[in-house]
Image (cartoon, rainbow, N blue to C red; front, side, top):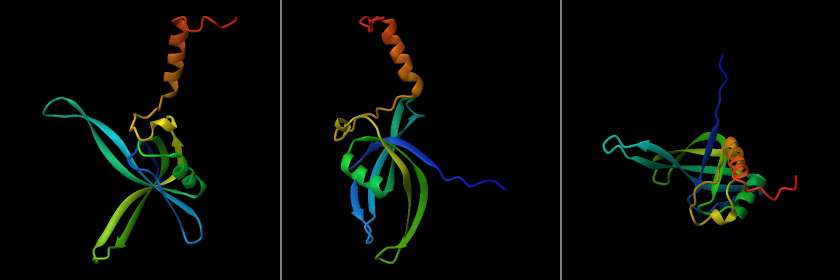
Length: 147
């Protein structure tokens, strides 16, 4: 029998400031809204366009408090978590449904100054950093090394 896997990894920018609240027992719950762009080629024009996808994220406990304290609109983050489906009856009697991400971990990317500006995520693949350092060395940027 195959194992069930429910895993989500997203990297994007916050579309609004985090919202922190507490359960009656005192547990912190932080709500985040994340925009993640999908790049696709327009079949009619041949131009590349970016379509934003929006995700609601819930972060529990101490990590939720940290998100509320240090994150702001526009800040790039990486989220690792799982999908959760919710159903409820609205006040008008209709059935409502939503899918949200329950975060297991949230990594703050970029710097604090990246908030409020909607800057691009400062995510650099592992191999790219080494290539950049090697290019600087080859260009003579490290001439003051004493060996």
